[in-house]
Length: 294
Image (cartoon, rainbow, N blue to C red; front, side, top):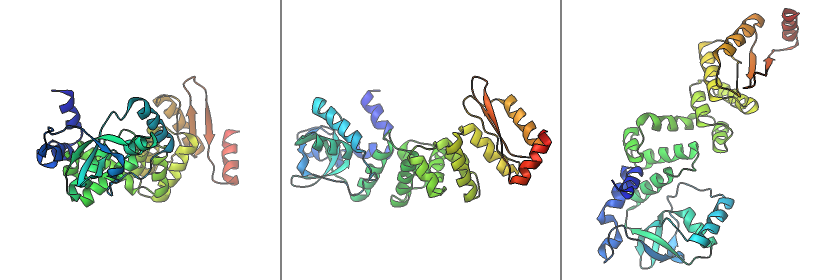
């Protein structure tokens, strides 16, 4: 199997089917073979109204523009023919913007024809394949594909090359409070943290745990433990980071927590050092704990 075929397969059935179909390629009506690249004027290219991505980092655009000045546009954009000397982007808005910044007047492009429904699906799937998308951007694209292209989770999985469980895990992130979704977008917490919190029933508990994760730099394993204890009605508060989860350390934490009848946070590092943090509800509770220690 050639690298080209492998690359097309990775794009998902919906996009690859459209791009491999001669009926959707305007160049197939000319001498050029299907899939050939044409140089088109940048001032003839208009934005894709279905572009799901609205934020393009200026620093990243400047870096890409600098690369384009030296090497040119390595990966052609994909456009559809709108009329005489007029094209609409299907994919490649970031490359197009960077090419304009680099001072180019032309850009290499695959030229297709597609209806609006195909345009939306192609743009969304192409966007999902980007490696720099955060989990919320992927989730929103999945949701749009389902709602606007009338797909169920299984059909969506076929389009993007993911199993139904993976698709569902992304969609569930959109049930989290907005503050947590923003935290995922800006990298305060990972998708692993978020997936654990989705299993909590109470939004207030989710937000409280979110802030705890950020403040204490909790590992995903520690968050999973906290969520499990919360659902089982046990006292929570044991957290460890800096090393892999250690059942012996966890056992010591449980002894502390049971003896003091309080939430105990145990921070354990790889060097063997650490901190024991005991939580108390009020001053009277603090005096009670002090009496147990003395």
